[in-house]
Image (tube, rainbow, N blue to C red; front, side, top):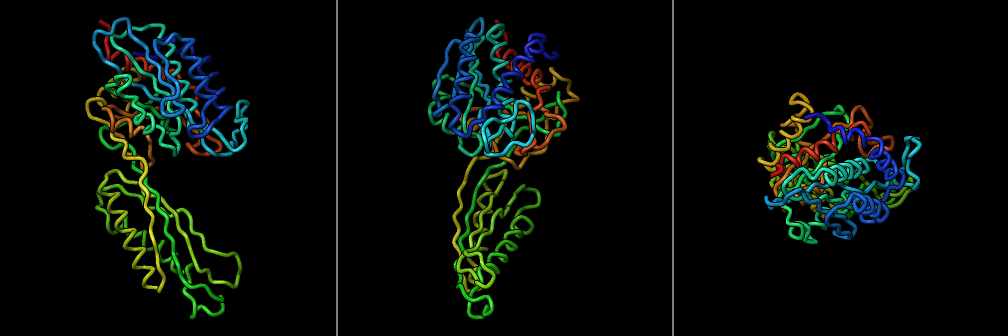
Length: 390
């Protein structure tokens, strides 16, 4: 089943929506303009129910099929928020807001789901209902969890939920996903080291926290190489190291390290927390310093359920051909708060090709509008296949 003709005809209109959203990026839960834009379009399409303010600034709309005797409700989710990045694309529709840009393609995700909603409101060729979910605060705010905690699944009787994300490097017109862990969990750690400040010319009467911190960084590298089972995925990265003061002749009293842990299982995350704590404590003690660890867990692992993932792969294969769908792609160590929705309901997450573009979170990134007809058609096909018309 190729790209729907109607969606191909809507391509320019949907791309226009996407570019409007791109020019007006908003962060985390502060997506009032974007949410209002989405809600206005959904009203214009003629959705059967529209609720704003779910998960603070989220929007959910229900579209009923020609019949609802199946009693089934499928959820489709797009994220709306941007990133605190200065855009460097030079595009005519580049960000008009200083220090903010859509550097992860959420503008494209929102536009594609709006395009699918417009088509589904026109056709309604399914037996059941679809809930289109527009989520704030994917980029660090945990908006997916907030929407779930706000009772979204129960309120709309959502039984399955599906998400989509663009993938630079994957050709346009191709898809990729897998059963089981697809994206990693997150955790952040902060390490505070207390030594003994002193004159840089007399290091023997000080406890140099720069040296201690450097040894801690090196010690942490052993967790992945020497504590992790070789068949398990784990990332432990120190991302900042700062000491007190900014002079040439003073040994700092204190140092602070920050970093991230990514894992595909809870067991690996537990291992990382335990080993970081032990290595910080004993490495610091070896130099006469003290070290304390703060370890904060974030997004859980994004786990795609088997039946729903096989179903979504079949939908994509019918759309673009089985040679253009990778149904057992390698997991990514990036994270995604759609994981909270998949903890609440069975479902699947799929990557859609963005072509040869800059990577996400890069100041020169831009969502590829050529992907729009494929994304919209995938959503429409999924709804009609999940709830065949009576």
